[in-house]
Length: 122
Image (cartoon, rainbow, N blue to C red; front, side):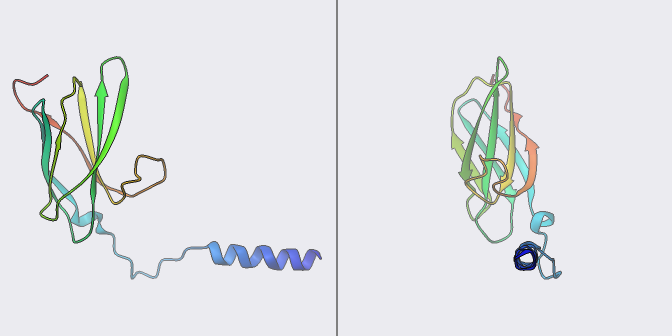
């Protein structure tokens, strides 16, 4: 019985090991945030991305050590826009590959940057 259990565990370990064959390409080198701005009513910007579906994960840091996260798609042209009016102190964005990137360990982050506040905004 011990030999059968050991064989079973060995098969599970072999099946769960991920080996890279070199065929997988790291696309993070092709992702670049050109600019990102917030004018008090709209978060907008442009991202250089390869073909595929990508999303912006925007984290809004509010007064009093609070924050919230919104994920929205990037257009095929690399443009993103979110109509939102928030009294925030700081905004950070990340380019991710999944709309589930709100959860830990879900999605891959390819690039991140702070957002510039446009003059005359909070």
